[in-house]
Length: 386
Image 1 (cartoon, helix red, strand yellow):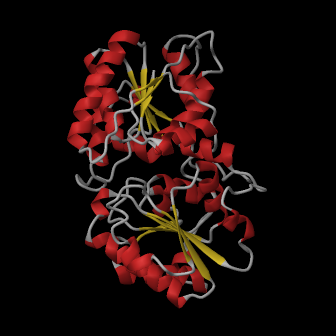
Image 2: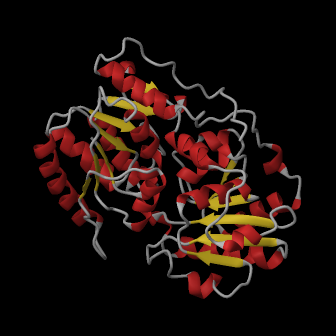
């Protein structure tokens, strides 16, 4: 049983589901979604041609994390009582992930955690994801870590080596399956845009810890960037959360080179990232995709659970300081500087496109369908030539 509820989970679990379904003689797969995201979730599932077996449709307007959590635990308990799975797979760090793993634990069902072991070691950054992920790892039987660094985190916390499997990041699998050199965008603006002569910055924000004055500082830096660089267009797919949109009209609306959009369909978003000159984001997943597409990355957070991008010189942790974000962006846009000189694109620390195969291979071994475990992912693997 695969349990998830948000767009990022759907992106990263879809390649795993498609791989598991290659073995109908061994696996009967149930896909259960909570509806923590709605339109965005099904947009991704349609892209990967996956239909949920059960849609709990739990999300309601102005719902709190506590109310969603209690409701999800109760409904997932009913699902597991009925279906009685042999293994539950969850992904990452969302409320759905926490609830799915906890209910499986209460039912004494083995748990596989895809994207285990990521840590910022800061309780409230990202919030509540840092603690969600740690609690899920505690009850997990099969810990699928994207990188060796994630494995070392788990070993330092006392997890047993035989529980941990370094697989690479399934987001890389999904992006490789989706990228097209000749992609046609749904929005004709992108099909008309001259990517060779003009510069495009893709911007995203959604982290709860950035609500309030931090997000205002970020937006002010973006406005200053576009005003001082006439060859730059900023594309901002705006998260549906109304808290993110509070400062949009005040600071960003009305500029002809700040393109405010509803969230893009996943294929459009991936292919936009591949064509962008720079990515400014507080997203975790975009940090991984930026490395794949060899794009400079400015991370508007005070900490990250994905330090690999920073260690390789691809990303820079800027926090929410208006001046720092602007100066870093200016440096990337105007030529050689310390940040650009540190970029090292000769390897991809996040994956090689085979994470889902490794995960499914571990599962087949767990159930004694196969006799050997897969060779683990190594961060020495080269970036694939897209």
